[in-house]
Image 1 (cartoon, rainbow, N blue to C red):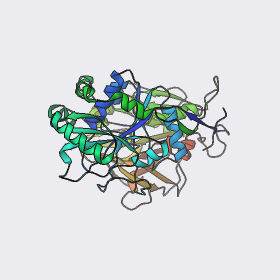
Image 2 (cartoon, helix red, strand yellow):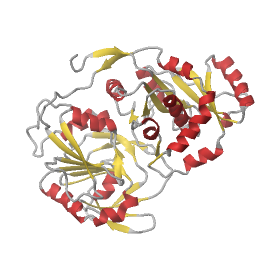
Image 3 (spheres, one colour):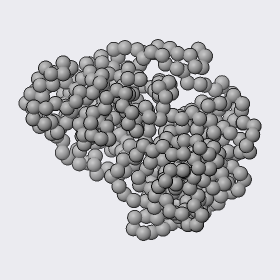
Image 4 (cartoon, helix red, strand yellow):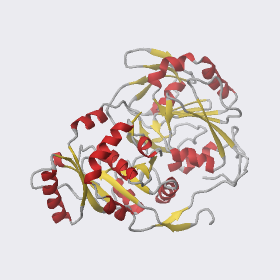
Length: 460
């Protein structure tokens, strides 16, 4: 079937999200994934916003890294294509998030609020939804707002079986949809989740313990039935590169304990459009992969490895030489901090970094989640021309201060240093999902010298 054609596909899928302001559905999400996997259902988890979650259980439970969808960044067709492509190794897709907006009210279809909407994703992908209800947040005689496409209910933080039965009777009689499972208060396990360091992978023992709590109280057959009740129509196919095609772009991706957060779809689509993607370690390697065109420094936790990064002089010199040869670097968040002149820790320690950007990156611990932000380029860079707009989620853990003449290139007041450039290095305080914004992905395939493209067929 040719690229750009559409098809119908049998793709079991379901959304699961909280419906009350301040509710945390982490324990329920992890327990549900584990229960499905224990029943032999291979699950692909999708986050409903294109930023990195503070804790990753999906990789530990399913062996598949979580992927990302975003109704604010993506067009409906792009979202569908990435969804279908991301599900190719799984039996069931689980889209996780919240039906509550940042203002604390339940989302409705058509919401124009900044940031992705789980309700909109349910509309685009025809997802039946499981509403996670926190029993401790229920107000007397008042139910939360029922989300669009709700097809089942998961009760969370329930005191005992008696309360579970009472709530089941109440919700099923008023909402006319089934309660398909419930989870107890489990204070110890929830405290263990909260205590996990940011960016860590969930311990598999904790995931198994949550699964054991939920599985006896879960109606797996009912959930599988809801997820499989109808095919997904009008699914565009993703482009593929013919076997044996010579790579037209060599991308070196930093991947080790310090920098390891990337959107899987971005890396997949770079390869699908003809690039070779090779990883390297800023912590341990002394050179870049051979023939590198673009270096991609993703997010992570360089603050935990600041001394080791600072002491690897060979790699920092290799990155400087890469720029001196007119070749390109893109760095975001933690990768941006590595590319700066120095990194400052919360205790005041400062560690020299690559120095490609003449600024200091300041790290701070904060419980804040990344914020959706749209910025405009105030200068031409290899990633975009002056006036081009970027959408992403700003990482609140990093702030930037200049040493002299600012390298900032964002036009918006107060956000000038959220985008930086110097020579062929571009840095961002935003998580940028290039797969969600094809016009940005296409810039990777531009030549080092402006003019002829590397391959004329690679267009946005």
